[in-house]
Amino acid sequence: MKFFIDTADVREIKDLASTGMVDGVTTNPSLIAKSGRNILDVIAEICEVVPGPVSAEVTATDFDTMLTEGRKLAKLATNVAVKVPLTWAGLKTCKALSDDGVMVNVTLCFSSAQALLAAKAGAAFISPFVGRLDDIATDGMDLIAEIRQIYDNYEALTTEILVASVRHPRHVIDSAKLGADVATLPPSVLRALANHPLTDRGLDAFLADWAKTGQSIL
Image (cartoon, rainbow, N blue to C red; front, side, top):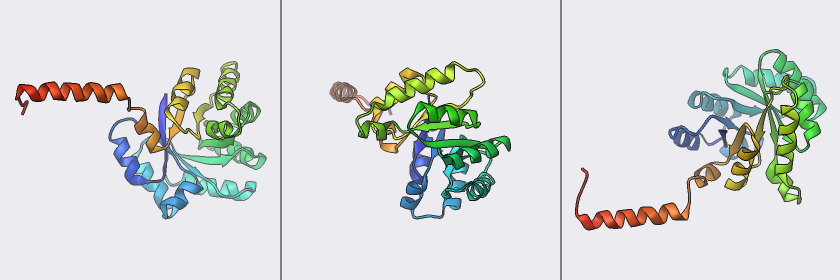
């Protein structure tokens, strides 16, 4: 499974990228607003740090403006994935951009029917929001399983399942078990994947035993 980082904080991205765990980055208007910076500057800088796909979202809702914004974002770097909402205008934009060879991430997916439409429109990525489904008492993992089954039925569908709205490590593990291609994680969730109380306990015991020897490797 590939890990994308869901943030517009360049400092966080640089820190996590140094671990080799970052395969890409996703941003959205909310994350850009939180950064307090110009969207074009932020995306260009992130693309220099991370060689993998960097999702940059359009803000228009009509097709013509959405397409114009998408083309402008795509010119920032070759690894930009233009992010469009799963609306009819978004799907039309996805088709036009993908026909031009631009990666497109279709976001705000909440049903397998929507995911099928995005794949047929040529999306490089579909972003089902599992956390938001969980928030309304619907199991987000059921959606991942449905999309995986549908995509696997048809070799012509090459869209990657990018699990979004990830809230905790269990979302990541369950998505990986179901065969999702990508999970986009807040930095805190990526770091949490390494945590386990038994690891901490074991390390403490090793260090205590080592201290008793009075030795030093250096």
